[in-house]
Image (cartoon, rainbow, N blue to C red; front, side, top):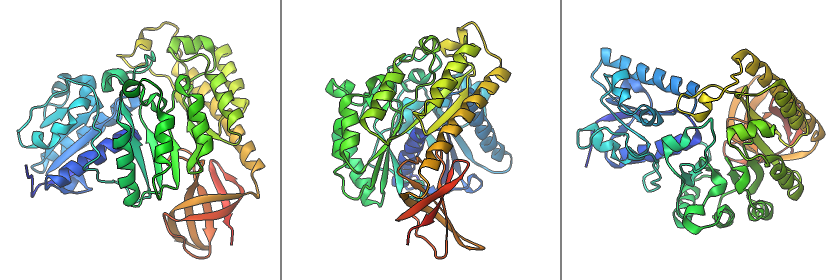
Length: 439
């Protein structure tokens, strides 16, 4: 079915997994003959691909839908809402946004082009996701891309509604992932970032074993991939085989994002999270010296006391992580944790968040100080003229995009975005690392 000559704009919200889905949708639009535009003011059709994992994400999604709908006052435009918000609200979404032209939940995204012109109906029945690699259109010119290896989650974390929004865990096949990775490499991608709701459980449903180690070994053989980075690993499914593979292959970054959420066993039990995460972290650090670990923590979870918060601060100060995202707990109405007693005020949760952030920054600062005057390889991502020549921003193998800071360099001549350079670490400004190009 051809949809020419309509212009469509897609607003992608939320995490990198949503980014991948949005790129699959853009590819489907292009294959159907739609003209893709980056400005919603120029579009005949607007798609808002939403996130609702936490309250703040849900509110951002609702604001973006309202913004798109406001254009109906001045022009003839259709507005469609997709992803987690319709999945969360289901039929309620039409009561909240009666002016939208249609919606699709996470498991029905393939119907979107047909929905535009009445060949499909709005629905949010099955939870799931879009994992079609045949028509992917990258949304960024930067030489990195995300590879979504699975959809959904089998864990029952009490604060999380991902299983409701995305369904049970479903891995993609090894062959489909290697094929997509090869296509991305041929398109110029130099860094492949592995994502899923839970990456380390990859393969358990298809191959009856945790198979991320096997996938990574196959991806490491894809030509032109300089870096392969692992995000969203779940502590209890980090196997010895996975650790060994990360250690073995040079193009697999010595980097792992492994959310542990807390250190108090009491709070971890209430969260329905693994209580032995610290042992897993210690094993990784001992087996791969120098590996960079990123994690996430939640403060103010129901029942958290000053003693629990202090235990978390002490754990952070042990220095296992170079980076950490710290989030204040907030009730999600449909999450089990919203029914727990012992609510912690947002004021106290915020104070504890600041304590954790300060402790984590101290760890980071100490590590960077120890690395002064050592050489580092980085990928340039932007270069602009400055008073002193050129200001360059980039990332090293221990920096994930957007969340871990940058390598910051001043240089007399321009550097090429996407190319790799050697530099010497000279210090830091916050989480940005100041460096000098090694001539």
